[in-house]
Amino acid sequence: MKLPLFWVDAFTRQVFRGNPAGVCPLSAWLPEALMQQIAFENGLAETAFFVPAGPGRYHLRWFTPQLEVDLCGHATLAAAFVVFKELQPGLMEVTFDSRSGPLVVTQRAERLELDFPSYPAQPVPPSSSPSALLVAVGGKPRELRSTLNSYLLVYDTAAEVAALRPDFVALRNLGDLRAIATAPGQDCDFVSRFFAAGAGVDEDPVTGSAHCILVPYWAERLGKTRLHARQISQRGGELWCEWATSRVKIAGHAVLYLRGTIEV
Image 1 (cartoon, rainbow, N blue to C red):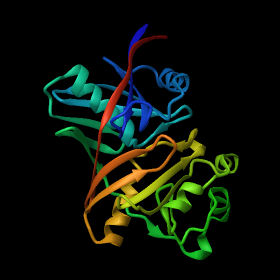
Image 2: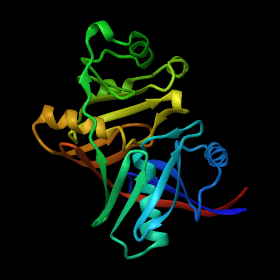
Image 3: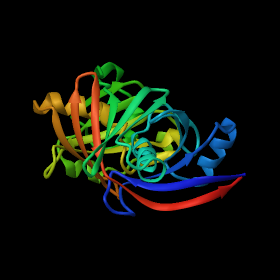
Image 4: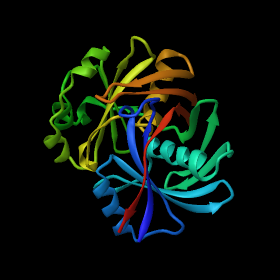
């Protein structure tokens, strides 16, 4: 069986930067085990699979090398890029039905804008502080918040976030917990890094879904709803965000690296 495969670098204008995602458009769903094997073979943070669901609409699923996830920003951006540039040129908006509900992606000039849910994080009381997680991530965060299975670690400076050298073995042993390290930016509103070793992704280069948590925090802290963000991983990426209370708009660029066929 031959299947199309696209490799798209998301949240960047340049190949070899941003976050690479595999995208497999399908006419019908493959067995779940096979999709997981393809994602493992690709070795990317996420591989997106989607099937048609109507005009300008698709069902979308995301797999890391180890498991299926409920929400992924960069692979949604990559999937929309493939729809707009390869499958339906001229289409300006696409809706993906997913585990996290309908996700709309709109072309805004050169950028693609994701409409995602907002997940504000709540302060973690000192008595409930996950000491093993804090030790594994490192540094001395000034604030700790959490929502869902994610922890938001807030540092004083971007330099502190850039200097983090997490213990990924220790993080992996904590299970499927995600850690978002963030601080004020110098040439942007805020910076971040994202660690999800328990999901098979030690450090994700650019994480759209993390901004569902980051944007409400920084919008309230900075007193503004439009925010410019950078993820300062080794590859790096850039995002333009807007907080709309129950929703978060996350925009960025994407570029095609590979167009090919896989045989399974």
